[in-house]
Image 1: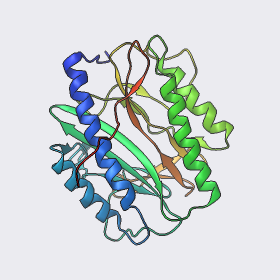
Image 2 (image 1 turned 180 degrees about the vertical axis):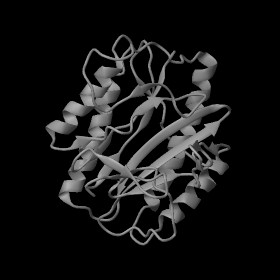
Image 3 (image 1 turned 30 degrees about the vertical axis):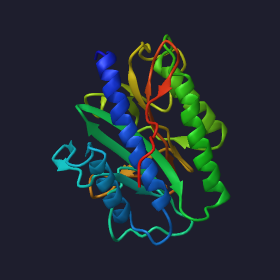
Image 4 (image 1 turned 30 degrees about the horizontal axis):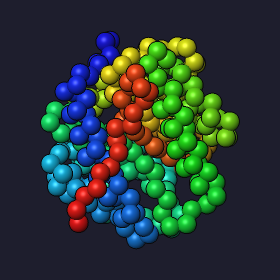
Length: 259
């Protein structure tokens, strides 16, 4: 499939959508603490998305016969992605919680995610979060015009595995723009020099999903929540990145908001 390349207008609209997604995410991070429910975070995210003039790209998203029922994806501990918020899910000291915010604005999508510690977490989970975030940075550095998608994938995989963790293989990063998922797929594993060639004007959602244990996952009975098959914790960090002649540019940068 042809990989969409954005023109000046598309890039401007992507900047705005991504700024909104990043701002919502930034507003949610400090709300994460013991005693808060994932539904509390969902409602705050829903309200911020509306306040900033956007709408959730998650809410009502259809996969098979199912539609996603929330405005945010909030995944706790062994939940890799697509966790459904609930008043029954109360955050506890030592948990880790991944906040995934995807918004529509003026016909374009902004997509980002961040895993937040709840209170004091174990040294092992601290390392898991640090390695996953650093893997994202290393992947972004490989999103250079003239490189290939496999260069991004290999950089992430090699760093994660060198640190004793595993990358999820059932879920991948992706292009993003006028749809939440556009070509190309961006696995978090692969070989350098393989895959699609990176060209100027691509907008890519690069998103390492890293497990403390093995890489295998399974889907819960709700049809959405992806968890680690062995029950080990998982971390998820994501940015939307523009490829340019000047190098990769992270678009999901929050902007100041008034109280």
